[in-house]
Amino acid sequence: MAKRSRTAEPDEPEFPHPRRSTTLLGQDIALSQASRAIRSGKPPQGWLISGPPGVGKATMAYRIARYLLAYGAKDSGAADLSVPANDPAAMQVAAGSHPGLLLLQRRENEKTGKMMTVLNVDEVRKLSGFFGMTSGAGGWRVAIVDNADDMNDNAANALLKLLEEPPGRAMVLLLSNTPGRLLPTIRSRCQRLVLRSLDEKTLAGSLETYLPDMSAGERLQLARLSGGSIGAALQLASSEGSELAAEADRLIENAGDPDLVALLALGDRLYRVSDGLERLGGFLVETLSARIRAKAHEGAANLDRWTAALSRLKDSFVRAEGLHLEPRQTLLTMARDISHTARRAGAI
Image (tube, rainbow, N blue to C red; front, side, top):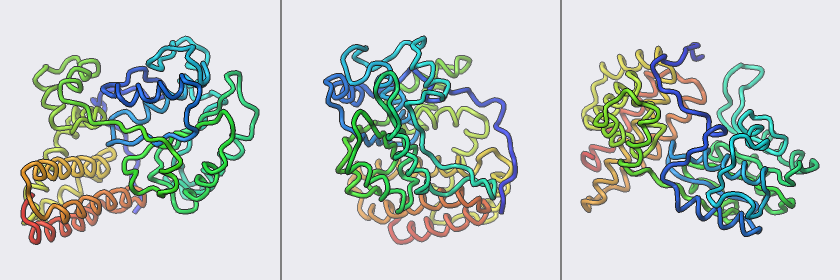
């Protein structure tokens, strides 16, 4: 079923696009690793930037791209890879118009008007033409693949061929939430940059910039609920976000005995909320992930079944969003799966 056109909630806090963001929170280790490699003059031609959703992977990628396009692989710029906002390269990156930067991501299907479910081979093949062009003033060309998890098999193989014969002064930045699903040969040809979930104190402090009218206690609560993701925290800050997060917690809490009537009602609500199914899916994944981590610290058994259920849960929401499936059926399918897992493995 086609998705209705809906607008974002007006009370959602604004968050700058990563290409315009100059702040990278809590990722000093990964940033230092990238800085050493780039400023040494011998950076890898492929980076795999991994980490949970909303922790700054795209912000890191654009930070690397700005530096290379402004200074090249030299130590001419700042050690933290920052570039002045008035630098011509930084201004072009912020405007999305730098000729030395290419962004690859899922596109809208021109025939159907719907977002494609995968990043296909035609998109990835743009890399050959892009890297074949004459380099810009800085001498570097940078491509960002957001998100590499979206590639289908043909696209992954096309990317692998390019990584096997990389051009000079070119860099591919792959963003991934689940790098283990990428081809081992792609992973082996890229250097890893692992971004971690933000600690509660760092995240709560950063939220003051975006949520100045919220109390410190409320911001700390958001940090605790968001699993270390500033993106999730800002979603939670909206009225719909907090309600959907509560629904996600109830669904996991009552996994063994789901309320089908309540699920149908929730499905109807999601159809009327901007990106409702996608947002609920994110909260469900984070809620279940947090519970699995807590149980693991306690030494609980049978977590392999819950881990498998978590993987299926992620897949189901990605598929539902990409195919614009009806929210109620997606929720019922998900509820049956986690209920079956709860009966076999025990409550989580």
